[in-house]
Image (cartoon, rainbow, N blue to C red; front, top):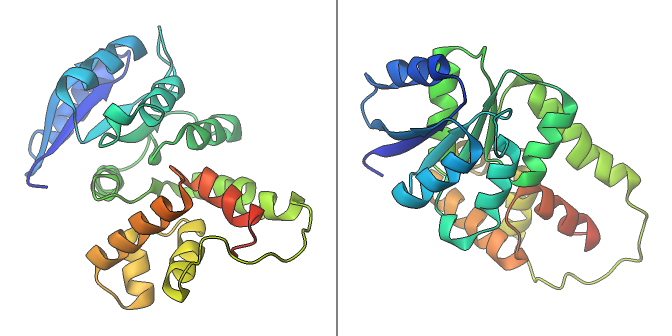
Length: 221
């Protein structure tokens, strides 16, 4: 990916202008359009097909979580990645965003370096969740689900996962991004991306929430 094309969706002009000012000097990143509400955001990404949509949660017409859900449930947006940029770090918003399929969640108070790291991570196919947000996700979608999932009889793996795929599965459920997985398994980042893609395809899941549910349902971990 030579240029990361970005669309901004936020109902505050000052916020959009601030993000554009931050990104305009960054080589390899281009803000190609913007939207002031959720409905506009869908129209803009339909027209432009950006690599990433940076979206606020609280917007008129459609809120950011609804926008993310629409993107993830429609195959024509399959190449659009979503990064939620919000002032809210409440558990409710975080969980709803992840359930909708957000690829990242970053607080508006984040530093420039963290913002750029999140942007590049999501653009490369990874997931990025800032600070305490990661703890909320882990507690609710890994520890919480495992803790409250009734024990089942041991069943044979219907997906025939390889040893490597099971390693990838465990690391993904720990919210490791492709770079982390590559370092952990001593493989290239590209190889990690391929393994992750194949795993999601084999299990027929679109996000970590679905992956975690299926992994527990079939006792894959």
